[in-house]
Image (cartoon, rainbow, N blue to C red; front, side):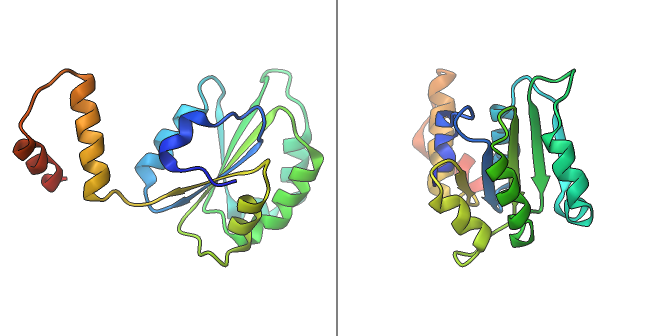
Length: 162
């Protein structure tokens, strides 16, 4: 299922254990990860680490922890190579584990991207670079929330400097 990056607050992680973030906007990805994970510690893995020792990773994910109620895992630099491991974990139906795949730009032909887009229990979120329209919207929202009145020409100046 595809969700837009501005709809992140609508994500219910109770229904979905896997989320795919792809695109070049790294700052927005970090902010989204922090918004999704409010109380758990984040375990960061690199795709290369997982592929080198996939059985150990799957056992580590499947085991329960006495100290943590939920596991929150971020897999950085995910590509199509990790798809088989994700399918295995998806079939195991891990209840207390949330996995976020952080990838760079994925093409439409990507197997990982199409797997996440087609399955209703998986969430796929593209993060595109900010353009002037998005920056204007963010600026106006910020100024409205802070009750700051400023002329449109000054807002345009701020956006152009960004």
